[in-house]
Length: 565
Image (cartoon, rainbow, N blue to C red; front, side, top):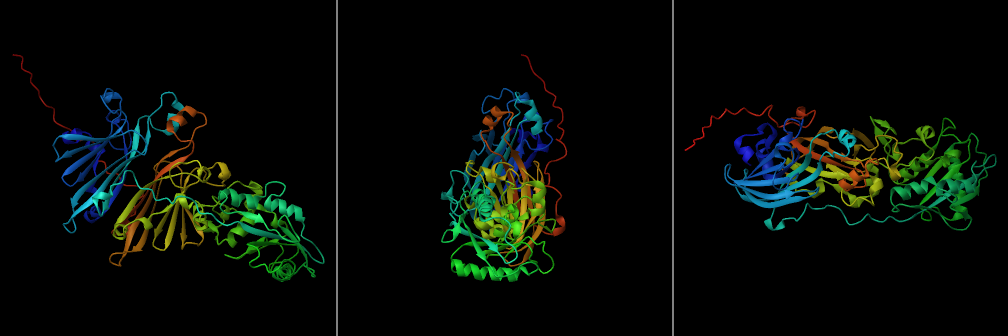
């Protein structure tokens, strides 16, 4: 507060209200800031020393009280985030809060006269420490990897309009359901086929082992079980003439050179006769056609399946191919292909974009899962997923919003005590999904962009997904302009979508003591998601705007006389 009054460090100070549209202020705002200490003023290449908030008649000052250099002997609360206030610009200052740890929060209710209607309205002020960094002299190599030689803290500052001041939260609210919903077990039948002139190449036992892991690790059932933590399981069908999930039929047909649909019709007829009506008896039925059938042009086809159906069809050896099996059953589940740069099956961050051709050159059975859009569609990890628009006031949506989220990867679902796996945004007709593609555990062999923040989109809730952005470093930003119909006046208005990586952490196996100091045994990333209303879609920024003057103003030298008496 005193530094601001003296005009010190004004080139590293922002006042939040001064940068915002008046109507937007009435509905609330959010800003993520990186703070550093006084002693690092000449060293820090980015960040702020002070954030000042103008709230009604009071002023609030948020800073990081680093205990080093010119401030090495600060007498209290060293290396903590401090919140001060003054009544008026030059009144006495009050120390309101000292925030020492990540997730520490200061909250307060205040009243403010609305700029739009003149009424007195109530707001929450929420100041939360997102993450902190202090160079560790014991691990210089880790500091170099971090890239900073000075201490800093990322802080979220939010003002939220409320209906009643009695609603003050004790901490930032959670928007997570209590648990992931349970999915029913899926009974799965695999059909081995004998024709007049040939037979499915793999034996019944080989099919059972490849698909269900009867005598080993069956990729299809294992992937669905592992990637859903047991919420979506494909189990071998049981019944007369079914052995470990596999049945056998004989069709009176020479299949070589025959259309695959003709052979399928004959196989379904025999299967219905031998195993009762398929529809309703089994959740999924896989037909392994003998080699020699064609798809209308050639015999080199692999598989096919219909969306939201229970039947999938494979060309002989492809009935054992891991990725082909996952693609076909995923299609039965209603999952569309995954795109990157407009090309189908190019998004190799998830199983619905990883093709069998790439599989032959990569791994027989890659340990990877579905991307965030597919996980949401399947209802997986719904207890660690939020949809932003669904939680916001309609008028607030019209003016924009901001949310800071901590993301972690699929493999740490049972380990992480806080944070999210997916953030889903409903923007006009499109849906966006933000996730962290950690390369470990059940996703250890993700084929692309490991340990990066990913942005996917779909048109509609179940359309093909498109990989829009891969954000690998702190301060990496994805921006897009979109249009949306205003909920308050019905007009089409333009907005910026801004997704920025604030900070990341990945445990370093070489420095276990540092990991223990960090307190987390899993990787995470803090991400800022903002929607900002704009006047013209031509205003798209190339990066988040800076609000810093170019230099600290020069003060005149003060001549000072001391009198000895």
